[in-house]
Amino acid sequence: MSQETTGKDYLTMGDVALDDKAVLVRVDFNSPMDDNGNILDDRKIKSHLPTLQSLEHSKVVLMSHQGRPGDEDYTTLEAHAKLATKLLGREVIYEDDIFSSCARNAIKSLAKGEILLLENTRFNAEEITKLTPEEQAKSQMVKKLHPLFDLFINDAFSVSHRSQCSVVGFTLVLPSVAGILMDKEITGLDKAVKCHEHPAIFVLGGAKANDSIKAISNILKRDGADKILTTGVVATIFIMATGIDVGEVNRKFIEDEKYMDQIPIASRLLKEYSDKIVIPQDVALNNGGKRQEVKVDRIKEENLPIADIGQKTIENYSKYIKDAKLCVFHGPTGIFELDKFRLGTDELLKAATQASYSVAGGGHTLDAIDQLGLESKFSHISLGGGASITYLSGEPLPGITALKNNASRYHKG
Ligand SMILES: Nc1ncnc2c1ncn2[C@@H]1O[C@H](COP(=O)(O)OP(=O)(O)O)[C@@H](O)[C@H]1O
Ligand SMILES: O=C(OP(=O)(O)O)[C@H](O)COP(=O)(O)O
Image (cartoon, protein in one colour):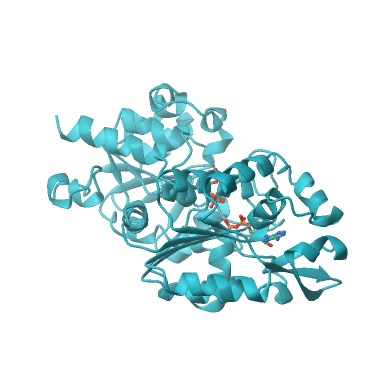
């Protein structure tokens, strides 16, 4: 198989020789962890198993990040190596450094068929910098490690929206290809990005409202959706943008989340795309744990926190979704962690599975899908939250662009 025959503008693992090669693989093992350092969800690690299983005749070194500096879950990858060992059924050796002479000696002494996981890439200050691939290629991490390898594989779609050292730096100095998970994500999401069938419906909610509003702007600019159905905190911002008073408690929530600057942006989008952006007609308020449904113009009177979309909105949105040729679902419609406020998320997720092509992404969204046992009913489930919404909005991801540039440099002469 070659690049020409696959029709892809990046190379995959099927395009290159892997056996007996020393291969550096960027994975994304970044997982939710508890205070005792236990990994709470093995989804991220499991997602890389097909790639690792295909490398059983190579010398394999894995790189990943975990958390962000300052966060509780910013920690070592020791537990990840143990869990990967269990899931893979082969030892994944943990090395508590990234590119010291100790780490490099451990890499050099690896035998064919062995796998080693280097320490959290973000322990190295160079990793967090947002530089171009050319600049990242000059980092100590890349300079010290790249001579030890024949090939770089990026299997970490979910961090490929970051131009970080371990994501883009090696693509300047090593032949580089997409891993199996990366290829699956690009292929699954491309069907949504390149979909010319209508109606194309996006259901955008959750709490990362600034990312979603940026995505809404990009999606509508490229004429990628017939309707954007707003839910979650995204909907609260759009409700406020129409001039509706959501009461002190909800206004304070938006202020505390530092989303007040999103209201004028939402307002401009509503003016420009009034026929495309849909806001809820009713919401469920949290009244001491009870679900209290009100029309949006009555929220102020109650002055209770919005915790889900209301029944009328669920009915209305479900109709759009079930008839959709494409439905993208990103972010829960409410605080689905509380039983009384998971109705919108559950019902709209079920409706989404009836669309001709259905895509879902985001950690919390995947938790809700798991709880409903709906995983196999979606056409594509993306492991990346920020990465998938960025990709779906039509923005190039630096990690993928780097693979494409590498393919034209190394393999097309
Ligand atoms: N109206 C709301 N008010 C407060 N939190 C909300 C609301 N709607 C959804 N959420 C919260 O949003 C979180 C998930 O958002 P986000 O992280 O953006 O989703 P994902 O992980 O799927 O990308 C959940 O913890 C949920 O409780
Ligand atoms: O879990 C991830 O992203 P996500 O929360 O957007 O799904 C990735 O590991 C990226 O992590 P980062 O957002 O700290 O760069």
